[in-house]
Image (cartoon, rainbow over all chains, first blue to last red; front, top):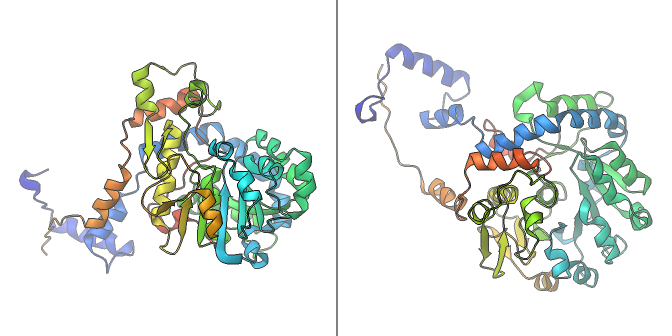
Length: 357
Length: 64
């Protein structure tokens, strides 16, 4: 770099730059827009770490799942058709996560007794508890369940007699990468299957799996297109996107979406991100614990919550997308705890939400 | 042909977004984050989709 940041280039270099700027569609835009576009192709280190993890551990399983699902995907509904049959009554949706606040505050029981008349979007893990608490599609006809995980064990969230009892009244939204036995369990319970793409590499263009899989799905019927959603890395955030982008809801309420741990949760549970990980190699001295698992104060609910590195990442990601959503989309967090608060998020006691909507 | 690169300040919106992104103090380093994922094998359910050429695609596509 020259002294004083002086930017000096040869005339021939400028000519080349102008040519590239023009060819990349930026002829009428200023230099800053072109520079930002040209040099911003760098993912955050955290995005890259998570991406590397999934390519290393799960990509092969995703391709296998998709291949086995393909025939059904081609013959079953696209989630884009849901909106055609959905009354969208009052444009409200409640996303039900499976966080600890759900039980702590009896939110399912409160919902079951309420006169709420909008849509319910259950994350797969919360389906059976919701149905058992009386949050059923008989009482709430616009009832949806969503699965984005490709893991085999997700099928257990559909394995209960109560799912068979109410399945025929439930709309299921499934990623094309879902483990086939999971979709089969839902299908056999009578749940209507509606497919979505879960975006991960679409930015890579024609060679991306998102693009190629879409072409394969459309090979028999060119108009059989599926919505492609941002998952934000977890099913709760996916539910928020489904509420906004597929159901076209204007007010989206979150319950059971802590994206964090309660202070009195067992340390091993916190360290292992809910018994998902192997913590044998994690140093758990106090200093390290406080750094990796910071306690944060929610000033709206006046509660503390403990983040782990993964919740911190996904919480900040959902907040980013909420900030980027149109102004007419309202996000209400009625979890009554957790890490989701800040700009464009209205924290509201769930009883108060139910009295208003 | 002359090239004159004038340096302007970033606008207020960008500054505000930077402040918001750090509203919760983030002590963990990128290396520690990666280390946690690699050592525990826990990474959530899926990856976050990024498209730096077409940022609006990050919010999803109606159909593909």
